[in-house]
Length: 301
Figure 1 (cartoon, rainbow, N blue to C red):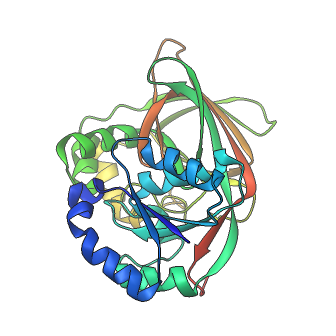
Figure 2 (figure 1 turned 180 degrees about the horizontal axis):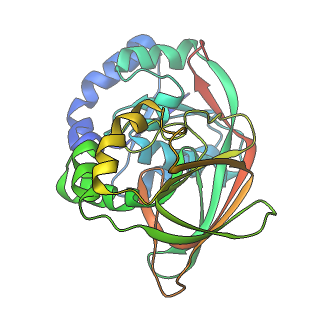
Figure 3 (figure 1 turned 135 degrees about the vertical axis):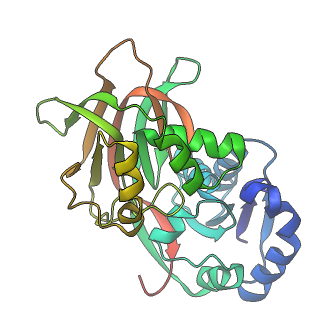
């Protein structure tokens, strides 16, 4: 039987209250399932890992991007070839946008039943965690550093929208100075408002930061947004949301299978964002793992 891992705290805590209706829609469109509820951060990964090891073949993540990422991490760390399904109920919804999975439960549940399975690439990032220890995790969407980490801090602390948090952060933003290496090329210095290592196309609650990214090409899209003034960030925001920013002179775009990033000032602490969470800081090494995860997608994809 398929297993649904539900984060009742997702979508600002409304998923738990909405679960009876979500379950009804899922049952009518998809069929029978077993449900497991998370209680705290990290639970979804642990539950997915345990469930995969016990023989589950299809695990559905019900929540936002953080929940989806945790379930994917649990599956991948189990070493089992388990398929991931997505039942969106979160704030950002960035990964489901890349997969073109609708936000309405009934429509998403129908895709879980009738959609097709694809193998997608995932990212693996090594970094320094909040306790100063070396750590590693997988990601399915986008990892970044710079202004995005401050936006997410504000979203989580104030329960603000991504757009409002972006505008508030831009007024106080300072660029970050980084040393970046793509594959085996020479290191180079960058001064950026934000640097993104993208497996998928969207991050930050609907920003189409990597419009050309493909989940099956075996490469990251590396997007650098230069040192922009607050006024320029405000003016450019619509272009970033629609994905038309790559033509801007302040924006760089490259493809790579491996990226290393560190702060130019070794004493500086530069926070890292991964799939909408803030697990730690630089230095970080990103590697693409081709076709590592099976995912149920819209049959149109």
